[in-house]
Image 1 (cartoon, helix red, strand yellow):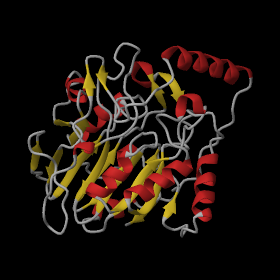
Image 2 (cartoon, rainbow, N blue to C red):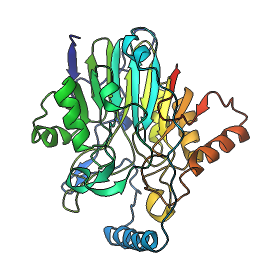
Image 3 (tube, rainbow, N blue to C red):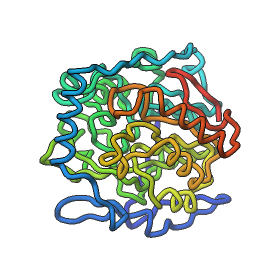
Length: 348
């Protein structure tokens, strides 16, 4: 497929397309705050647990796992009709692959979010790190041709080196990434890349991809913390899709919903919210994710960032239960607030 790609720079503020017209985004959506030490979150009161505390709790957790291993079972998978995904050119679909990886089909494009097909996520190209206990919902070899890859940030479970290398070699998709990640990809021979600041956008065909804020962080070692930007993404075509990446709950959801919503579908993280002393500033509980969905003014909800890698300390099957309970408490239709099976496809 021949793709036309247009990029809007910081001087050409990304469009909020309403009734066929464009309007400038508010300053709350960009550019990202930046200081000599790196990028910052929007909330001036944002505080993350110190590296010392995070390292200490990680070591304690490791010893706990060695002494009393936690039990994880692979999630039951859906039956995938890959022939339908390959032939689809008109239906708008979303298929959960696992963790934060979705295959989104919109306006003739096949889009992947934070792709990860590795058996582990972590150092040395995934040879050292957290194991995967639920296989990908679609085998890599059965993917339809991928046109666009969206990356939210550089943490190992979201920017997986073996996977992006495989995607580049097989499909040469357009990688859309936050500031700083283009150089990281170029060092690995991946050059079909466009990097954006918050508030900037790129057009692929008739679909506009807007780089939007998140409340999180970045870094693959202790030496490169906050050096690359983190983001969420608004995807605007005949339908509107929001990919939350990884984020704590904050005001940016209301700002994005006001400027770029309403959305037809929002994919938001619902796992790795424990222990709260570390997780809460940068991850959401299922209840917070549901509030973020309301702030975004989205019609449907998919829970992501759960059930795949042994990351948070909550029981691996707790996030979808809490999400369902929170939706029931708000008397929401369970068909519009979903935690999918791996490989499950919905139309939206």
